[in-house]
Figure (cartoon, rainbow, N blue to C red):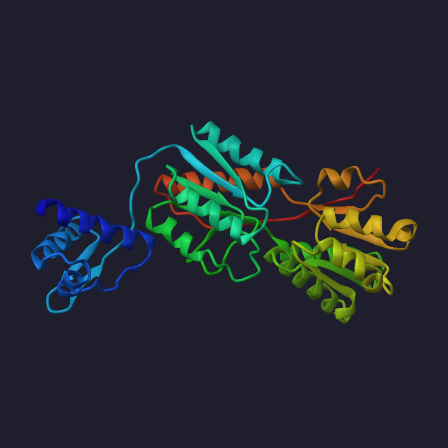
Length: 345
């Protein structure tokens, strides 16, 4: 039994390091402190600390204490990749997932799919579950990326366990040196607005998503294009909505926001269709521009322009970057361009 106690203590300390309780460079409790806390003898504590040092997890500095050295844990390869998006079978996500799965399957990997429905509580549940599963890496679409994220501690745990993460569509600035593949949303917002300006519109409304970073960047591009044309950015012409209140805010505020305008930039095709529904026969008064070039836009009874992003390419590129990281290669983030294609019904 005495021989098992130091192994048990070493396992407990390793689990604490693994969970992020101790960061790299942080001093662990002294032998006396650990003995008092655990009830083990100093000899048992000392042997447990030696186990951590031999495992390369700590560095003992004479006269100063024992410090966490590099708490990154290596796993045996499973050829499982977690893929987490806000939604799975809806809107543009099947196309993105097809691109991801194409690359992963071609390289002998299996996708484990999860969805958060753009809720941080769901994201936490999914991440906690994945931390216990045998996976090699993760491709994830961040949840409400424009807001402070309460789940950053779990992303730190993925890093500590040696599980690389590649973000798609958006990412968290709080995550150190994130690798991501996104559409260039700022340029997309500029391009959409410039197109309307070139057609003679001077009063352009904008509908943007407040809790995802894509909405903020599309708004920034929209505002920059207006200013570059010598026009004012008017708060009364901008409608912000969140994941949970989109329809309610559109139903309440759309007509007021669009009243003095001749064109509307919509955050995505789902919003554009809702705008068409709410404005009814009067929709002919406005020209609409949207994002995503989805099936919704192609089948709309009212034609409008929807900017295209390379959805399948985005998925393929994210998967390839993750595989490159797993192969020990350095990777960088990438923003893909939007293109414009007129809808014709």
